[in-house]
Amino acid sequence: ADSFQPLSTPLYSRLSLDEIHTQKEFLDPCGMEATDDVIDRLVGDQVDKLGGLLHRAIQRTVKKTETDKGALGSGKNPLLLGTACSGTDAPALALSIVQEQLELRRDRLNVSKDGDDKIFEYDHVFSCEVDPFKQAYLARNFDSVLYPDIVKLTDKKVRDVYGQEKPLPEFNMFVAGTSCKNFSMLRSNKRIDIEDKGCSGETFLAATEVLFQEKPAYAIFENVIGAPWAKMQEYITGRVKLSDCDINKAIKDIASKDKGKDLEFIWEEKGKKIVVDRVPPVYGVRAGAVVAGYLKGTEKKVRDIAWPTSKKGTCTLTNLIRENGISKKDDTLVLQTECTYCTHIVKVDTKDYGLPQTRQRTYMFVWRPDDDDNVNDDL
Image (cartoon, rainbow, N blue to C red; front, top):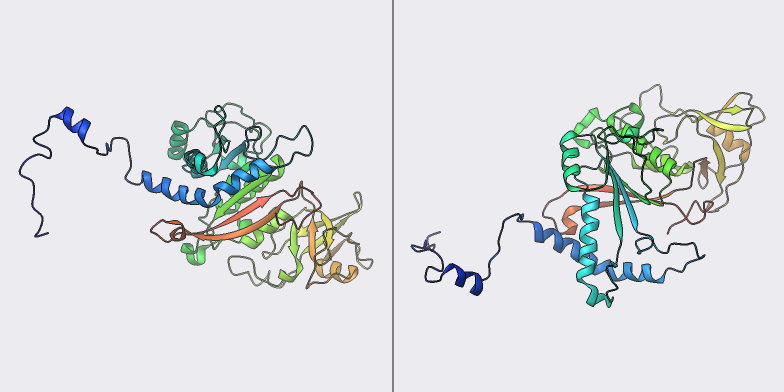
């Protein structure tokens, strides 16, 4: 501070304004944020690592038939993004920067320019946000359809924020950062689970309804690390690893009346189906779900499950295990879903990606395998 000497005359006082403009370079801050270049650099660093791989994946995809559109992200098959609990729609902003950074690296990637074609093509087709202030931001900054409530996205007549009837556009990538309020560790002993009818559980279950109704090829779910991720995976995949049945996957203490309880089923004579009747808090299973069978070890083919001969109307998971010779250590219970999804969970921290803060989050990557019978697809 002692060495600082304030200027007594304006900077470049001997130059005219025209001379300053022609001879000197300076940043015009009008309309810019101090962090603008920082975000571009952070995304650009990731593009440097993955851009070449993305480009080669798009180029090398072999079409199986003439009607195939090609790789996701190519000109004939752009990534069509739909978001829910959108906030400021960071996924759409990130994709726009990725596209921009890829174009800046054309020479490095040895990609020639062909008209207006981009290396990576995407379109942001809809957002969904309940908060009026965030709705206002989205409406001003994006041209996509804007819906007001994720819970109503699967209604027969879906309406946008202006009350107009607007069916969901076609999309192949669904990103949902569902509410984290009830799952957050900051709530201490007031945390509530998916089935407790809080906003976190309702928005997550609504997002799964969108998945199974619209069947996009890919999805990403984001939430706090303390969310009940094991149960969330079970809701989406319809698969319950029997070795995890004794693990408490609930996020709060289980009431004494529910401790040690088993999954209960009923036999539906009309459809000859085994149907889930009662679900303890440690399972991510919907009441009313139909049992499809079970997977033996690492097998990919689902085996049938027989109803216990000694049971008339109801039975437990333990009864089914004993009747069918199922291994609780190695096998997996499979429930019927509208389509097959596989999942993978990744925990991330912003400080590992160039941002000077610690913000830990978990992401669940969801995808449909090429073969619906391949429930163990690992991409």
